[in-house]
Image (cartoon, rainbow, N blue to C red; front, side, top):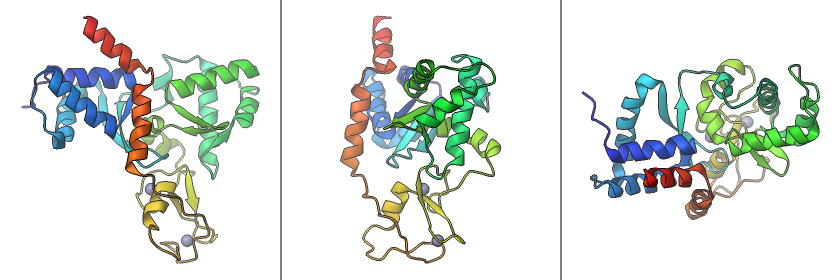
Length: 268
Ligand SMILES: [Zn+2]
Ligand SMILES: [Zn+2]
């Protein structure tokens, strides 16, 4: 028999529902907060068990809290995943047909690129050739912004990538639709969009930036773990834990739906 959900579990789930995704640092803090608020027993190393209880109760609704890595810094995240919809139709209640077509095209561009990104210029061109209904520049920018705000895309200096939430939530879809294009990281074996590629054309393995950083840490003469050729890329620095924690703290402090959810539940 599964354990029943207590108020602490329900509060955790409410925050997951309004946020969609949280970092593991946020999840740990939220776990503590939920247990303390509702006088439930709290042990810091029991987060996975705590989430398992919620997942058992989510199963009949085809929902699941799933763990995955951020391509940005390699930090673990937890996303609330809809298991019933396996493709982009999961977004259909929030977006018009031409917006969904633009998202599909964005995914095509990102998956088809070596860098794992799509430029805003390319996306604007795409929007001008949509079959469902063309979009003007302003409208396209607005929709792309919405994708970023809803945490489906991530944007940095005009370059768009799939967000951590998108990768966790649509992993199965990506693996099926883009099976000829996706690359798996040589180190962690997860899908890798943004990373470094071995320059030996007969090898060409790809690794996440943070996997490269961890793999080559302290080695003066880096060689490809597959073909042993010299690794001719600049080795990225390992992001210090404190840095990724402060960025997560900033995210948590930003006016995200979580604060309004807390306010809502406090009022009720
Ligand atoms: Zn990796
Ligand atoms: Zn190689």
